[in-house]
Image (tube, rainbow, N blue to C red; front, side, top):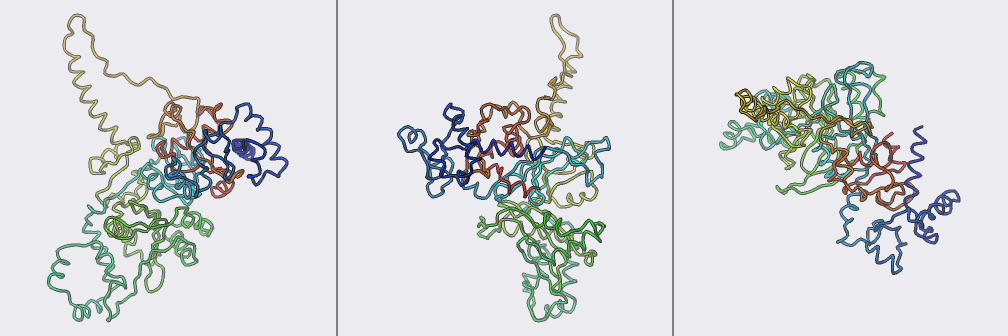
Length: 551
């Protein structure tokens, strides 16, 4: 059934991009295939009857230069980058497409929750999310996604439905410029630093490399996170003498190595207590080494170079890899994906040290924000995240940030699903209702009626689309809003052409609706889940390679 579905999908994509005459078919690499040529010629008749609608995109090198065609299609083909005018409305889109390709997977339910271990057979809520596969992803675009409740696991992108989840996921971020380490956090740093440096080095270095009076006073009175976290690194120490241990921290590409996998195996087996048969190189590669974020760099306002893309922050003690942080470095944040360590250093609180190191990275290089990943309030293992403050939580309904203070945490204690904007609105409405109730309790004057303060929205969920639009996922446009949106300019790639084309060129585009199950409905769900205002920043990738990456 799935294979048949994909065949029909690809057939639709094939039929949307037929040249305007048979002579133009020479630009297609598959034009000599008699079967595909038969399909193409058959649908050329449909084009002659007006069934195929062309926009400003034509096959590269085969633009219609006749009087009528040239006047109607002034824009050059976007499949030829060198021919694009700077004023072309597709330029920014095309540049984004060079590295941003998404394949929709759809809205579905996970069979099991990894946090509360509830399964589908239990009659409790499960984990519902919208999924997509990123065959390639720019850091700037992914920054927009994480600011809209998205996260990635390898190449898989997902946006959870907090309303329909046994363990609602919330996005947190910390402002590194406002962060002040707690006493416990400072002690963890100092304890590890003393272990690495050693007492003998500390005494000898104080004699041979003494601090000035001003430096000593500043160190005693101020805790400089960036300086203190880097203090035990070999590059920061003055030698001789030699420290007790050689400690280095390097930012490396997220490539697979045996050294990294050995650390992963030790962490999963001895810290997470996973059975050995559940730990494999394949899962390690998919989960922590298969990012499709493009790497690059930018210079921030502070003049420092910021690396962009997915990296492994590797911690080595005496030449041995003892910890590793998997990071997505984005234009305005350090996004923590995973942190693992060797059980031999557990007593030094490596998880805490890793978090402080990542916050220091955000502060030193101007990323500013540290995203600690999803926060699940009902999961005790995640409560440590609120120990780093000030934290801000993303409202799933308004997609705006709220301070996660004691008052907000008290609300999370009482409710499984929380929207702080809704809480404020309901509180204000409660005051109004209380005043209205007080007025209603007064004796009615002739001709007056009491105010109904208990009225509720009578709208029922639509049953016409049993997927995303009927899921109640917060922060998603309604079905009516999506119907009013022109999605014809969404760009698409397929295996049947080397060119980009827009959705409005699909032969079924004008006849299909987004209510029900159709190709147009699939595109509408993807656009809604990502955000309609971002639809010109990516390409919907229906190529076989996209499905293989997601498979």
